[in-house]
Length: 124
Image 1 (cartoon, rainbow, N blue to C red):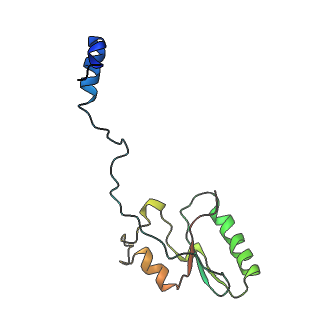
Image 2: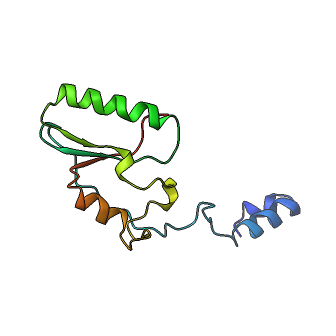
């Protein structure tokens, strides 16, 4: 306590003493998942294989075919593998380590199809 502290009321003295006992704790907590960087972006879609995966959200069954058609129009050498070639699942379950009925992970399925890029949403 300093000389200046002696001039404040007893309640303020008590509050200052109590507040000095606590450290700041973030309500968010510590990060438990290590961030990883992606592979970057493709310079072009021409000649690439684009895989569409869908989670049954926002009219993907209507919009993904239209997006595929437009990609093929703009990039004639591009191959689009439709969402129907992949299992329908919920996004939180799309983990590289989760296996399907055949024992394959999503990563395995994407690699088998030769995907250069994955379209996993349509802006819904």
